[in-house]
Amino acid sequence: MHGELDAVAELAGAIRSGERPQPARIVWVSRGPENETTRMPDVLDGGPVVLRRRREADVPKLVRAIELSLPELAQWFGWAQQEPNVVEQRRRTADGERAFDDGTDYEFLLIEDDDVVGGLRLNPSAAPDAAGIGYWVRSDRTGRGYATSATRAATTAAFEHLSHVERVYILMDQANLASVAVPTKLGFLLDREEDRPIEAPGHTGRGFIWVMTRDRWSPQS
Ligand SMILES: CC(C)(COP(=O)(O)OP(=O)(O)OC[C@H]1O[C@@H](n2cnc3c(N)ncnc32)[C@H](O)[C@@H]1OP(=O)(O)O)[C@@H](O)C(=O)NCCC(=O)NCCS
Image 1 (spheres, rainbow, N blue to C red):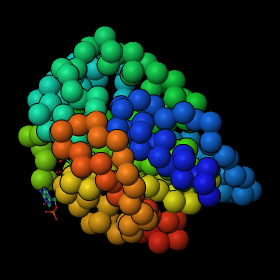
Image 2: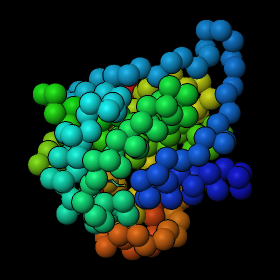
Image 3: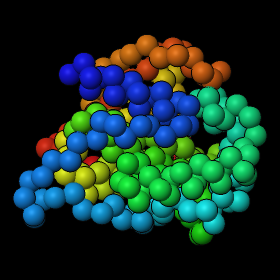
């Protein structure tokens, strides 16, 4: 259990820093041919938005979306304390492409009318049997349910395509009330609270960890 909580803390740090969590704790559980892990789709149906695997061609629109949202992102993300850098985003996208192919990390963009309106990361190794989800929405598109719809799609995909995943975690600073609303609207339960490093102006140093279990999940949540 201790190692598992360490892994969750690791995920929290990774989401905060914008870096990719390490895949060391991934455990594949085989349950027979009919239930084995299937390939994560490149595209997920997120209702009003499409979740599309992040690709190199998306970098200009992604950088533009981050630029547009920087004041809001900077409140909550350590990685958003400076203007986005195209070279850095290309490097991270290339790393992300390899991780998606390896099944060690899944980065999606939220797409509306072929434009980037946000991002979502599904980390399949938040703990040996758990995935983690992190998200952001472009500032001119918040308040439309996009984060909730995208998180619903990613949670369904985690349980459907990753057979080792029994739980999905979502973490945020306690002051981030818009983010807190996402797991609560979807029926996640509060697993625990934790101390967190303060890495952005909005942080209080206390975080929530929300959890959804496979047996409780309904894609219609
Ligand atoms: C947090 C964030 C992803 C939410 O995206 P979104 O698409 O607006 O989310 P949704 O519309 O699906 O749901 C947001 C909910 O929060 C509620 N909300 C927004 N601001 C709120 C506030 N200050 N207090 C309480 N609730 C708030 C909205 O009313 C909405 O609930 P409703 O549908 O019941 O009205 C977006 O604001 C964002 O990207 N913020 C900056 C980055 C960030 O904080 N990412 C998460 C880090 S953990």
